[in-house]
Length: 91
Image 1 (tube, helix red, strand yellow):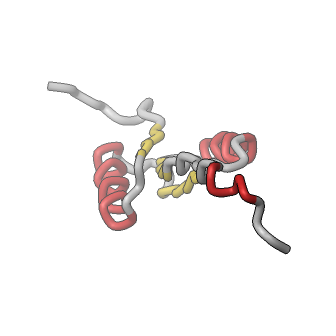
Image 2: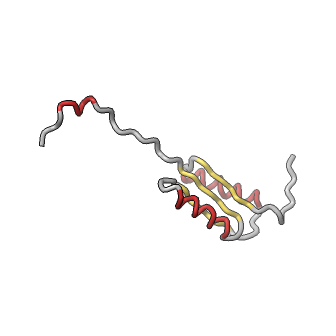
Image 3: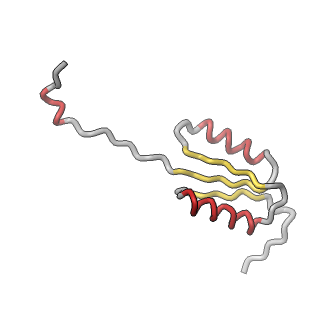
């Protein structure tokens, strides 16, 4: 089969890569269920979900997420924490 003469005039295919998103949940499995549904709905989404133990300190969760992000080069990192049981003071 020979190439068409006009094949050189076509532009090359281009698609923006999906951002790699890390979601770190500190709590029950319920949070991961919500984000798993989001991941399923977004067919090409590059979403990774990590669950830490229930009741983890929000500051420790953020440090954990930062460590994972630095090691794996995620484009976005989200931390999901139920802060009702923690006394957070912001300066």
